[in-house]
Length: 175
Image (cartoon, rainbow, N blue to C red; front, side, top):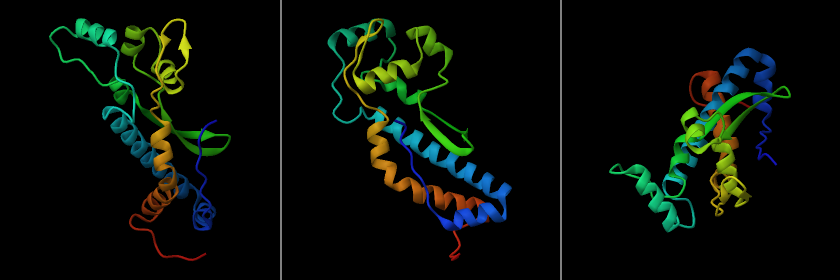
């Protein structure tokens, strides 16, 4: 199931009817701002080591040390995924939407790990076993941040919409 937030605001709907092109642009920009905001929050969560994630196993730390040589190696679980969080704004079934997660990964990641970041990330999110990658401990990356930010998103998107539509603060209008 894809988590969603619906905004029920008659003022936004009114401005979409009055000036559809400008409203669509303002909404697209607002969704892009929300996507960037969530991407930064998820990346920060991963860099901090998540919430209660199990530490790396001794074998994984040894392997990382050998691969890195004298270079600094990452000891926090999944730290590399902080750089791979993406967002994309687009239309689906006629409605504008923003996706945040792991997709369109860099080729170096696929070459090094033999698969895309979305595959590895989903193994960590669920803790499932893969014949190619083995069992991963459960380390949810997107879910906890989404649960924390979910209630703030409608107001955030509305504020950004009105700021973009009017070029400033949200006016105190009643429709």
